[in-house]
Image (cartoon, rainbow, N blue to C red; front, side):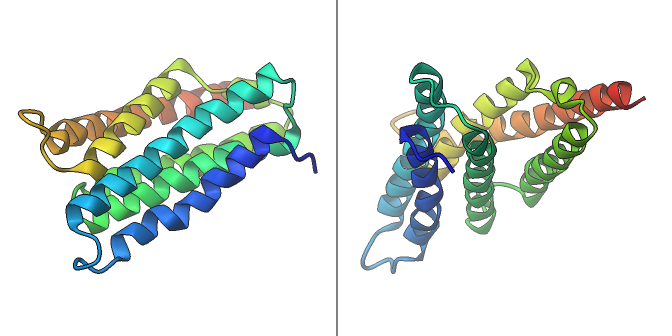
Length: 186
């Protein structure tokens, strides 16, 4: 197994997950809800930045590896799933949204594994629709975590709107990947 800076950043993202979730288990007299929201938002945002940074560094430093290509999406999916579950528990999103997004990630991961096994991995490569979906959810989740109004801006309102848009894009992109796999698997 290769160990380099991009992989270290990916492992850092995985280590952040229990810290991120743990923030919401502090007693209210030790850390207020507003502080919990802020700290969780910062942790999630740093994780999202490391997701971009590890990929950029791997390409820039020519340190791409098969293990990094495997671990990076696992770390992303774990962090997003943890955030969605926390948001459901905090009653900031509907469980249906979390089920759509998490279910799609599991289904598409399995589909990609199957397509790779039959030599058709390229037919389910990341699409622009998938990238837009990811951007929508990566903007929505910090808004929903922060929760508290910022002046006239209501992050909960806009985050809720964006996460539902991400859920819709999730279904569309899943349909796209399934169609591509169907065509390639014939």
